[in-house]
Image 1 (tube, rainbow, N blue to C red):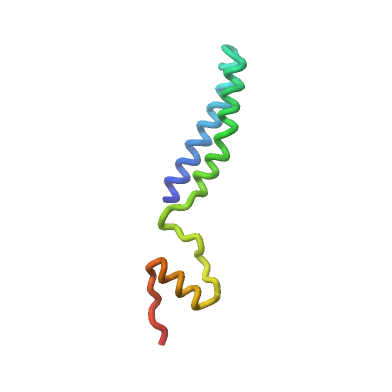
Image 2: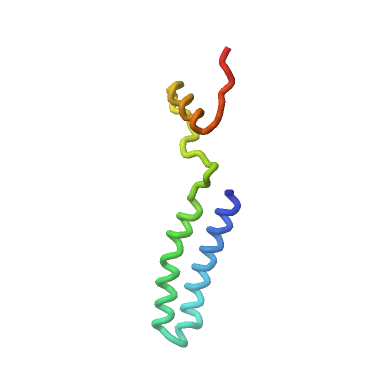
Length: 88
């Protein structure tokens, strides 16, 4: 999952960079408003890329660290379908 999120992030950031560079390299020679529009689109991509890269999958836990309360940790493990070995 991590590799897929990382790949999506780099593709989005590559598209952002491509839009920005192409807007002011050759699109501005044709149309300045189109170049500005490309920059506005490129401006929206980095926050979207950050959200995609930091999104958690259905199998990822949000609460990886134990809380320190054994009863609470046992309850969360039960919800996750994990069974702790019986303590002797």
